[in-house]
Image (cartoon, helix red, strand yellow):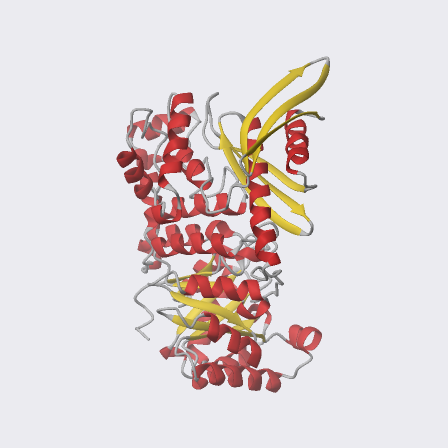
Length: 521
C-alpha cells in the first residue's frame, strides 16, 4: 500500500449504494455504461454491487469487473462464507480485484439488528477478513454505523481487522448523524489510537440525511482520511450519499486549505453526471452544485457586470474545468460524421457503446429542425442509443386537438416490420398517444413515472422524456428526445416497451433474475 498522504482516493459506489436509491435501479448493460464513464473519470475504486444479493447483482459485478482496467473493482460482502465466495467469484476477472466487508459496530445495531455481543462482532469481522485474504490482497473493512459507535471499541475492531489483513478501514456515517467537527475528531482519534492504523488507508462514507455528507467527508479528509466514498450526483439511499463532484471540486478549488487533491479527470465530471442522469431517468435540480443547469448561470445585473469585467468576481471555477461548455453552437446541419464523432469523444461519450451511424442520423434530423445544436442536445441524442432489439418503432404520429373536444392521436407503429395504425382519445395528447401505442402493442403496461426535462433553452429546445413502466411485474425505463414533446413521449414509451420485450425474453431463458437488495454501510 502506497503512503496514504499523497492523494485522496475516490471510491465510487454509484453502482451499489447509489443504485439503492428508489428509482435509480440499473440493469447489467446500464451498469457497464456507467462503469466505463467512471473509468474515464479516473476513479480509484468502483464498488460494482453486492454479488450475494441476487444472481442479477452477481452478473453486474462480474460484467463490470471484466470491463474496466484501471480501477480496483469491489463487491460488498457481509461476514458470511456465502457472501465472500460470491464476491470473490464475481470480481475474479478484474485486473484489480477486491472485496468490501462490513458489519455493524454501534451498540444500537448490535442489540436491535444483529443480536450479537461486541466480541462476537470482532470474531466475525476477523474471520471474514482472514477468509477473504486467502483469495484477495485488497480488502476493505467497514464498521457500519461507526459515527454512533463507542470510540474505544472502534479502535479495537479496526486494530483486529488490520492485523487480520485489511488494507483499507472505512468509517461510515451510515445514518447521516454526524457533524463535521465530530467527524474530524473521530478520524484524528482513530489514526492516533488504532494499532497498525498508520499503515492502512482510512476511508469515509457519509450519508446526507442532514445535508452534511459533503461537509463531513471534507472534515474527514482534514482529520486524515485519504479515501472518500461517494456517488455521481450524490444519489443513494434516503437523502443520498456524498456527492462525488462536490468533494472533488472542493478539494481542487480549495487545495490551499486541504493541501491534498484527487486523481480525478475533472473535465469528465459533467459528462458523467449527464450520462448517469439519462441512464436512471432522474433529472438534476437546476441549483445542484457543479453540474446543475444554473451552476454557472448569472442573471442578476450586478453579477453579470462583474463577470463581464472579470469572471473571477463571481466564479470560483470555470465551466470548462468540469467538462461543461457554454451554450455555443458546436455542430450544424452541414457538419460531417467525423466532426460529429470527434465532438462526442470530447464530451466523454464512449463511441464503442453506441451506434455512431444511427446517432449521426438523429443528429442530422435534429439539426434540420433547430437553428443551433448544443452539447446538451448531443447528450440527449446518444442517450437514446442502445443495443435493445427494436420490436416496436414509431412510424408516424398525427395529433388533433381543440378547446371544444378531447384530443385524439393517430399512431402508426411498426411491429416486427408490419405497420399498424390506430386512433385514440385521452385526457391529454400524451395520454391519447400512450393509449394508442398500448393498443397497437397488445400489452397492458402500468405507467409508474413520467418525467419531462428541457435540455436546452428557447422555443426550439430539445426535450427529454423518461418513463418507467411495469408489465407483468417486469419494470423497465424508457427514454426519448425530440423538439416535439409529444414525439419525445412516444419515443420514450416505445423504448420502454422494447426494453420490456428484451427483459421478458431474457427472463424466459433464465438469464435475467429479479434483483433483491440489502442495505450496506
